[in-house]
Amino acid sequence: MMARYRTAAVLTFFLFNFSFASFSQKTSFDEEKHAAAPDYSIEKNWSALAFREDVADALPKNENWISDSLKEVDVFYVHPTIYQKGPLWNARLDMEKINRKVDKYPVRLQASVFNANCRVYAPRYRQAVVDVFYHPSEDGDKALNLAYQDVKRAFQYFLKHHNNGRPFIIAGHSQGTHHTRRLVREMIDTTELKDRMVAAYIIGFTIVDTLYENLKICESADETGCYVTWMSYAEGVTPKGNWYKNTQSINPLTWTTDTSKVVNEDYTATVVFNPKKTRTRKMEVQVKDIGGKVLWVDTKAPWFRLMKNLHVADYGLFYLDIRKNVKTRIDSYFKK
Image 1: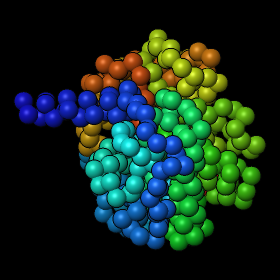
Image 2 (image 1 turned 90 degrees about the vertical axis):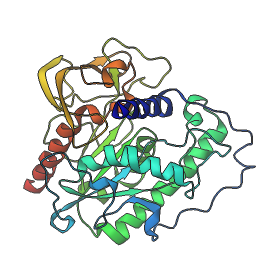
Image 3 (image 1 turned 120 degrees about the vertical axis):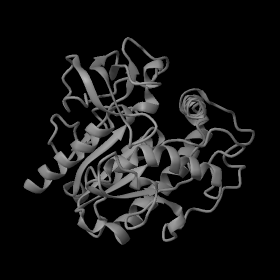
Image 4 (image 1 turned 180 degrees about the vertical axis):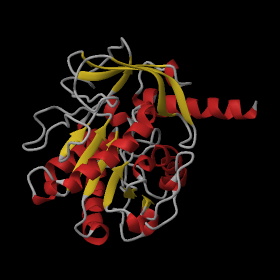
């Protein structure tokens, strides 16, 4: 019974923190005294680092840990918004409650999907409060830019001190994708770094097909040097607002942009709250053009089946398939 209540509490956290919360700040961005920029030479300013035991090491059941020394590719992952309420436009890195939530939820349940084949790097950053997305403003744009500058500095530090010329994957979700899509445009798309990028998993935010000069959406499971993206909703849902306008989506059951509905009667790749526990349920997935190409999902997985907006489940719905696809793209990259 207690486990049931705990699960319900976690669901409440997800629904509130990722789907509905929005708050107004009481001061302007310029009036706010902002915390100092993170020093990424300090380990505590990373939620996940290679060669360190942390939450990104979570494994599915029956998998054994593979030493980071044996992995030939790195992943640079940027987490979604956890800062939901507070007087600041940007969270400070000494807000330990927020740090614990970053670790427990997105890093453990999303960044861990890459750990079978990648060394995982996930920076903490002065994330913008979620209200910037619900009530766009000049102040909100400034808050997002401040957050992005942290992500950019973290990536530059990662390249210089951790990556050392290795192939890499860029990954993010929600606000993390807002920042990584810009990072890819400014630092990778038109530079020599694009030759080292295996793929970008930039999921849960609008990605229009004119965003990049060179990079395109992936069209097959083994394509490299491209990006993977989708926005998930329950089948039949047309969301309010402009979140989905002109966006693109891949169907992660086929890893193509084909718009045919795909039905799997015994889908076994879904993770809800624990990577060690996968769910076997019927799953129907279709890339649907509703003014933007979103992912319509009909899932029987617990909790997720209750949601109309499946944003929080963008990774969890397809957790093991993403995990397998990462290996497929890495293998293809080295063959090329």
